[in-house]
Image 1 (cartoon, rainbow, N blue to C red):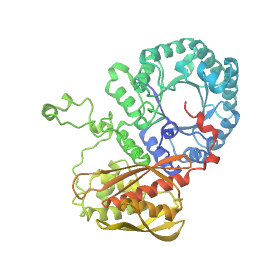
Image 2: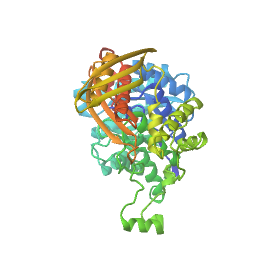
Image 3: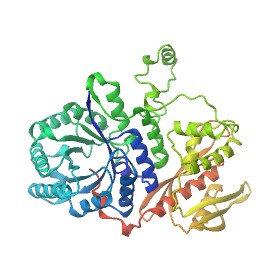
Length: 515
């Protein structure tokens, strides 16, 4: 079977999804999992968009081995120079440069005529080639562009030195039959089409991202740009796990293969969920909670007799492993480590020790510790070294005939501080006190709580959305005490906001990131 390339843009386009921003350490953790997954290329970020993106691209380029690491760059010299500066000492790297090609974008966004766009594209590719032979060129909004102009633009990019040509369905507008026709035409008419790789980058605005990607592969594209869990701008990108398993399950139809280790798909999905707080819907294909669940009696009977009656792939093939090992207060460190590895968490010794202490503490309060509890414990500990605010203790008093009061002790930049405050309820009192302690004038715009597992001893998981100076992020916390969980979630959100650059430092480059 012919091989296709998997280009992962979870850390660039995926991170642009509202609420999915990641710290540098979180990006590195996810990048290492993508390497274990076996993707061919990791788009680590947009180096010229911010100092944080530059540093994350640089760190991933130097510490992650296996995949090619690339940075996005507009068709501008400063973008390309910054990408090269971040990656120049990496072992395997490239530059992904782009410019819009549709009449709508050229007129209203770029304010350029087609000839000027053509010139900028040539200059960008030639400049990038001065740094590396691995240059990918994208024509933003390609599926709403004039096909004849696309042929001219892509041919010019090839002459300038591009080795990969990307066809983005930037706004998820096209349909599978149209994508097939476009790729077929480009392969027939672009200069030296047989010597370069055609790639596609599909968005899911009409729910067609995966279908359009597969249609492009059938037409001859040999690289797919996608994200774990399909996260990304607006309705998201093509979901990597769906593309990989479609090729694996329907090999006779596609006769295509890729280097992805499918057993790492579910661990990658869970890790991303815990890092970003973006929950996968239960009925999500491949990695959703119900993907391999059967409730109807007829289905259950069929699966018990022969799994293939209602399962076209095995849970094990995507990394969902049946494990009857019960974790409780008598379990040891080895059992905990094995289960965490199964869930996709590869922890260093120090971090494992911390989780083990928290696990023992939780196991003393619960009869059984479930996978979801472990994921919450690991997630709770994913703090980077520059956290400004750490909860040390919290005490709340409330009742029918008293004003809810909270006393909070926090470590703020290494200094222990204590404060008491009031509120309409115990949670409100706790969050008001934390706000006073941190002097962080943020607005709580959303609050939700759910039980991680069943039973009255279940941990409660709290998700909050907070806003400060036009910036929005999410925070998550889990504990058997819902007030403590709320405090942890609120502090997690404040820490995320505190690491973001101020509005006046925000680069205008951000508005151009949607390829």
